[in-house]
Image (spheres, rainbow, N blue to C red):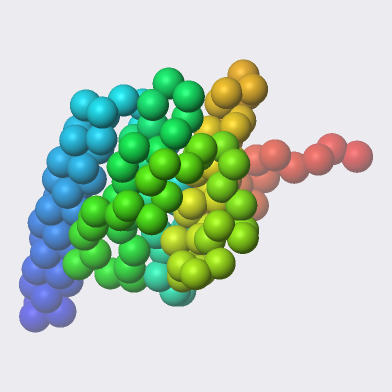
Length: 146
């Protein structure tokens, strides 16, 4: 019984912290959206810190302002980030990201790739998550037929 109550309390806390994180995302997204279009990039962390970056861009793709969230836990929050201000989002390269951390580098390059894909008329496809891939294997979804 004590274990069940503890588990329920942990679930409720996780839900509340997730709501706070979503509120932080919405606040920063709304602020950037008022400046123009918003480009979002993310780097999933798995067992290390992941990151999300958002850039407000003008009609030419020049970054006006940005923010990022990096972390492993539900305590991560968005922070202002002017590292790429004034740069064309479509031209961000590994060299531009050489002085930032790995997760922010991957998220920034993902944002650049997403922008280039959308501007060329493509669609950004999400890689399925771990549980989706496991479920697909169990139920035989997407199995090739011989």
